[in-house]
Length: 297
Image 1 (cartoon, rainbow, N blue to C red):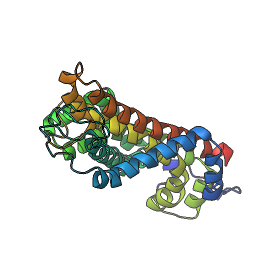
Image 2: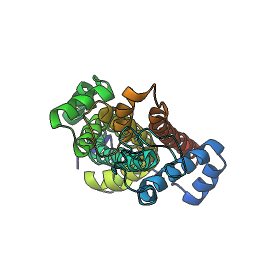
Image 3: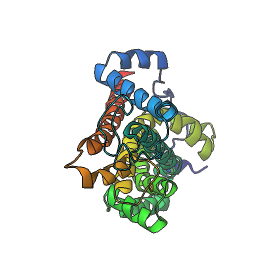
């Protein structure tokens, strides 16, 4: 164990208390008192329900109806049909599944890669920190969507490759957040006490540092998910993501371009779905950031 790596003292400090832990019941109560956060949570749950149950209730999103091309909203087709007679509501529901899958999985992959790297950079410092930060700076020098577009163009158009591209684009920001938290926590008395007790590096990172940044990671995830949803829609719109006839909000926007004069609702419905989903996650993330603030625990 390299005690100088985190500035350990020869003797255990008197104050070895860890930061206050999250009381989830109290956190939920405080979250429920924030109206905008509750609205965001409801919006997220609604779209999760649409993604999970909607395709079963709305029917097939690829079934053609050549006698109902560009039909307006009706009892048979609540949101109308597209240029191939496909039910718009069914395609919105299928698109919700694709978008949420891309957002959640890409965020989870970014966390799985970025958290260990950020921990290592902030804990060990030295050449480890220098190398990781320079690589991170290189990726961050490209805008998020530009980098994701480049990755998707190299990997080829598919939902799997979109998820990989979005995850890689998100990793640098996760590394920076985790590194910053680690730099603060490694100087706390409870970490110094663990060093004085002879705990190993992995034990300190896993038992003392990582659990105390859970709040930050939760908030970061709720911010990364809507970014992934927007990224998937943008890549699919450009033809680098989900390919027709599979439904995606980005694919629907692409198809609607040439029919804006005849039926503008074809673009309105997927656009509103993207806006409301990302708004819901952002409102929820803002609420979680407030209630999980260590100064408020």
